[in-house]
Length: 174
Image (cartoon, rainbow, N blue to C red; front, side):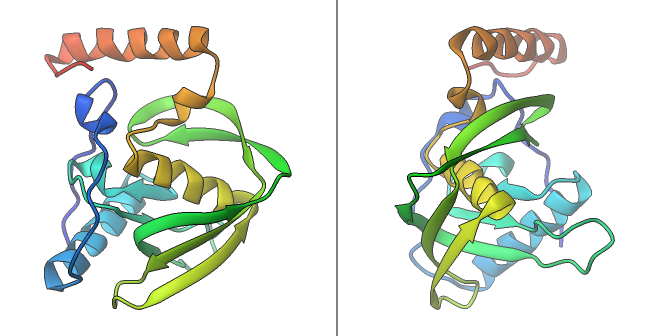
């Protein structure tokens, strides 16, 4: 397993829409393992493939509490097939937008169909932190960032801050 470098705002790669995975083979499973290793190292609770520069529809997450046994999950070609009318608000952060957090309102519960790392069709019903994390990571697969769910004023402020930092590092901008 290899820890991969994270793509950081304002890199335009984060706005790419990811392509479906057609075949689940050893390379896809290796990518899932690398993503989990990268996520745990960061540390974070979720990671979409695009966040390491791979525009494929896969995400990994682990919302287990610190000190509990790890419960890594792999979602290939995830799709939200149902969401509740009830809403919940969580303070979200993102490995691609380090050290910035904001409250985001999303559906409180969702149903997601996906393939697991063995290529088997799965359906999961999620609420609480798991639902929020899944929605956040699925957004990434569609080129959407959590800052797109906050006010334009705050979003513009964050993008300006990260663009300025990227210029200092000599990185690409959106």
